[in-house]
Figure 1 (cartoon, one colour):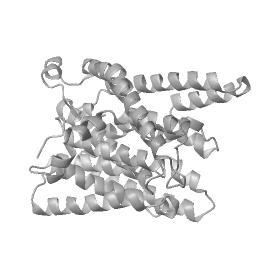
Figure 2 (cartoon, helix red, strand yellow; figure 1 turned 30 degrees about the vertical axis):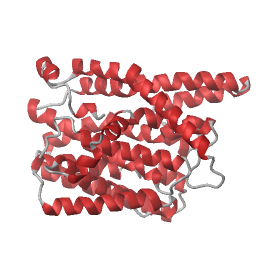
Figure 3 (cartoon, one colour; figure 1 turned 30 degrees about the horizontal axis):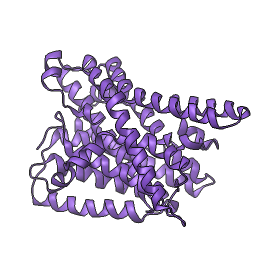
Length: 363
């Protein structure tokens, strides 16, 4: 089984599938592409927890300061560039009385509270998609402290894994309870507490993979079924009641099975996901997610699900512009920042130089 301590190209391919689903959804061409965000959540929970547990196993602790430095180098340069460009665009095109609104939106995105702003009624305009980045960053902020406490206090990986799975179940039950009450879908969908199942399932998977090795016909058959379920849900599941009823957990579990498969030997799925165009798309997926929403908005193709009157010429133009901007962001902004992360790696500098490809490459 491939170690998660090494770069796994197929995981970038899986990330490519997720971001493409979101973009196709926002192009108005499929119903369930919004669930691509939950594929991202599961991958994030898995990879970040794998890194933290590996460090704890090797050092007996987790370097919190260096972890946050690495996260900042991965996320902030691209985000600040994105915000700078679109703030200039907005300030140049909207009347001055609306400028305070723009600056408020920028502050909301910068401090990763966009999902809470949504719950309070702020739509955030071209920054509306940053709600998912807020949930992930909130997870990154508290999770190292939590997993360090759990590793020191419980010690048993199986107990921690079961606790995380139970927590994912609690998040789902809490979501269902609120939806049956007087809470709106906005409160249920955007909130961190009701949208934590994917992150927690991914984190639990990291502990399971650390304890067991998977292979064989059963796994590969399960991965075929998981792939069919995942693609079917991404294409055909409307937001409506599906989110309330736990479709995100199904997405997370399906993604978890696919992750296990691509880490195993002789994975059929890895052969598909490791295609060069898939891995490249996965590498620039952060930029694609950042840039597609305002580009689609400005070109008039942004839709929240299938809609009428789609201009396919505009769709093609929007995708070309998005990929160009994302590639430029990756090559000029993200990759130079990523090169600095080795200064804050918990491994020795020699190991960081000789083994530059790590799970951090995914995140």
